[in-house]
Image (cartoon, rainbow, N blue to C red; front, top):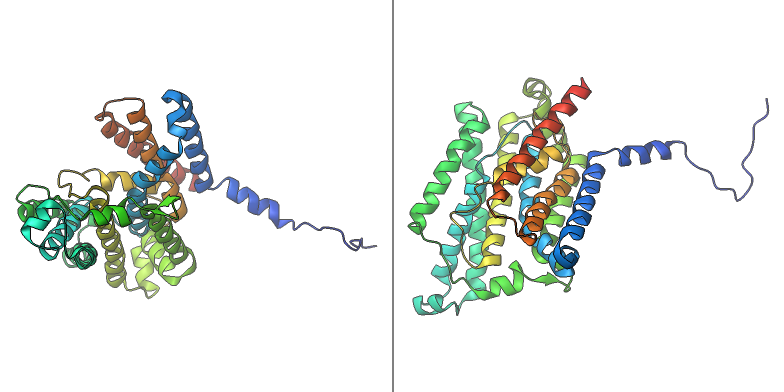
Length: 351
């Protein structure tokens, strides 16, 4: 039997390449990316004078989606481990309130603060950032500690903490938003662009997402996380310290929530104690649509990041088309229902 030899200089193709390409084309992240492109084109056609496709609107989309992308990244770790955090909205509010209070305390005299002209803006902003992240981390530690001590589901614990965190924020502020924050926060960070191209909050979201993807897919931490989601009992038998891993996961989520809280006040120069009520549901919807199983054991960081853009596109498109703001709540609910339906279908097909 003769063997055919490849002529010198000929190009050879690995038979595994088509299967690799097929895996990419059939991946959830790719399909969600297609949906994002279709939505952008659809609103581009429907919006007056195609304003949805303008460079300025794309910048707004990047800013609007950055915070949800960050929250979805943190939630992916939790959901992949079979946990939930319904309190991230309250965490964002509380972190932003603490940061704002620290900034106004160290920023200058009461007269300067009232005028928004801070004499110690640099130091105050740095301390405010650290306070926001520390508050978020502490919030996450409390969540994990309660879950470990009470031995109840994170759904119940974080539902209670959602109310407690919001209440503490109202107590600190007296129900009044902290405003007149330093304009330098907005000019240099919250609404600033990197090289005049992409908003800094969006850059941070992408960087954090890529780091999270590496941790989830390349490090033992990701294996332990998905092992928890697949079976807690099996994970314990494999030597995974479930309680310690749970603390780490909630600390990651808390740290990200604190970062989002600081980004929020940097953009708008005021706290928003009445807002962020739907952050948890929006993040969970993005995570599940992006390919993470609502019951744990499977996670997709990139899928979550791409899916987190969808609510921003829908809400932005509806605003441009002058659809009432109340419909935004309806959109969030519909997205969540679609996410649950997709997850149930995936589970049925995997059996």
